[in-house]
Image 1 (cartoon, rainbow, N blue to C red):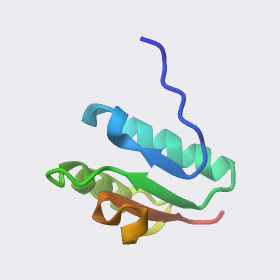
Image 2: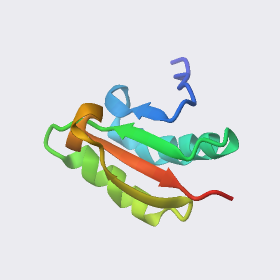
Image 3: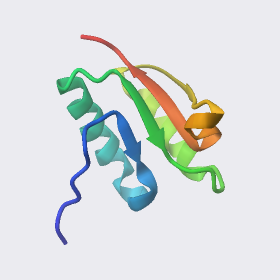
Image 4: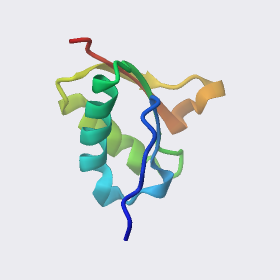
Amino acid sequence: MDPVVVPIDGVLDLHTFAPGELDRLLQDYIGACLESKIYDLRIIHGKGSGMMRSRVRTWLEKDRRVHGFEDAPADAGGWGATLVTLKRT
């Protein structure tokens, strides 16, 4: 299988990824955003059962590069997306 190319633009849509890819994907994407000086992210995890949202937020709580996160406003996905602010280094 060919690797998936994810644009580094501050918006990460998780709909096309398997839950098992989440940890590595978030690790790499946040690192790439920091390298590109992108500090405000929107992670789209969908509404569904809330399982992916919970996994994303648990992961974000543990990452020292994350300053904070919150639900996106309704026009940006509501509780189907999480806005993340990264620490500026």
